Length: 507
Image (tube, rainbow, N blue to C red; front, side, top):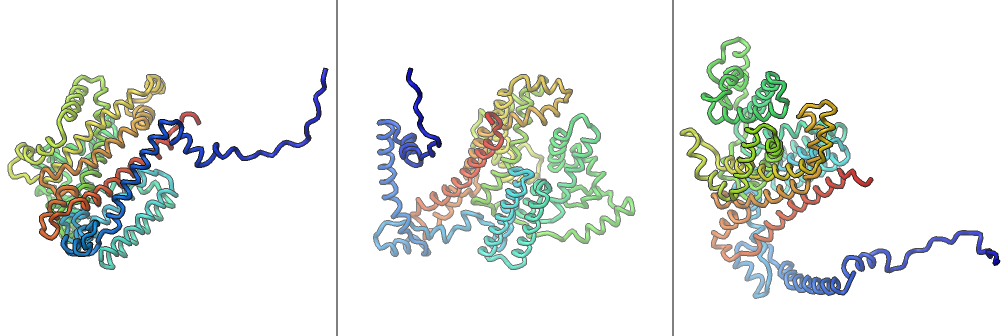
C-alpha cells in the first residue's frame, strides 16, 4: 500500500484565465466568431458597413454649412460631392417650431423643459438623486437654449430661478414634484397657446371641483371613476354649456371663474362676496400672454404636442378599456369590446380624415373645434385601443391565485386592481406599452395628410416650395430622422431600465 506523498504547505496564487477566455477576445469568439457560419456573416457585415461608411462619410463631412441657397452650396463644392447642410442652418426654426413667432420661442422651449420636470415623478418617483440630476440638467440646458435663441434677459432669469427652485424641491422633497405633474397640462397649454391666464386656471379648478363633488356624492365610485366622469362631463359642458349636465354646476360655480371659460350665467352680484370677487377678477383679468393660433404650430413642436398628449391620455384610457373588456357586466364588456375592435380595424389615416372632415358635422352649429384638438382626441382613442390589448395581455398572464389572494384579503375590486393586480400586469406589459408609444410618436407624421405641417413632409414641402432650395432631398430627411431616432431610442432604453429595476425573479 503506497503512502500519499507531501505536496506543499501554501495554496497556489490564482492566475488570470487564458486570453481566449476573457475580455474582448472572449466576447468576439462567443458573439461574432462562434462558428464558421457566424464568422462568414460577420465578415460580410463588416465589409458592408465599411463600404457604406466610406461612401457616405465624405459626403457628410464635406458638406456646406453656410449659404443662402442650393446654388451657393454647389458653387462652394465646386463640383465635388457633399451635403448642403445650409438648408438646416437657414430653416431649422421651421423644422423645430413651425411658424411659431420667433420672438416667442422661449414659450414652447420652456414648456418642453417643464415636460421633463413633470415626468420626473413618473420616471423616478421618490428618487432624489436621479430626479435632481434630471431637473438640474434640464434647467441648465434650458438656460443655454434660451440664450442661444436670443431671449430677453428677464425671461432667462425667470426660467433660471424657477428651475433652481424645482431642483431644490427635487433634492429635498422629490415626491412634491407630483404637483408639477398635475399642473403641467394647464401650464403647458398656457405657454403654448397663450391668451387669458384665467382660462387654464379656471378649467383646472372647475375640473377638480367637479371630480371632487362626484367623488363625495358617490364615494363607491372611487377616485379613478370620479375623475373620469368629471373629465367627460366637463368636456361635454365646455362644448355645449347650456344644454349639458354641468350647466347646474356651472351656475353654482359661475362666480368663481368670472367668465374666462363661460361659467358666468348672470349670478354675479347675488351675494356681496361674489361682488367683491367679481370686481377683483375683472381687475386682474387682463393678465395673460399673446394668443397663438393653432395654424402656426408645426414641425417637431406639433409632433410633441400631439405625441405627448396622446401618450399621456391613452394609457389610463387603455387601462380602463382593458378592465372593461374583462368585466363581468355584459353591457360594459360589449361596449369596450366593440370600441377596441372597431378602432383596431380602422387605419389611423382614416380616423385622421374623420377628424379633419367629418367630425364637424356631429357638433352643434357654430362650434369652433380646433383641428389639432380633433387630431389629438382621435389619435388618443386610436392608441388607447392598442394599449388596452397590451394591458389585457398582462392581466391574462397573471396567475389566478393573485385574484384569489386579493379576495381572501377582503379587498374591493378597485383596491385589488390598484394594490395587487395592475402593478404586476403593467410590469409585464412594459415592452408592449413602450412599443405602442414609439409607434404612436412616429405616426404623428401622418397629420401632414390632413393639412398640418409635420416635420417630415409638411415642413419639407414648405421649404422646397422656395426656389432657393429646390432640389434638396436627403438633408431634411436625415435631420428629421435623427431627432426621431434619439427620442424613440431614449424611450426604448428607459423601458429596458424599468424592466431591470422591476425584475424581482431570480434574486
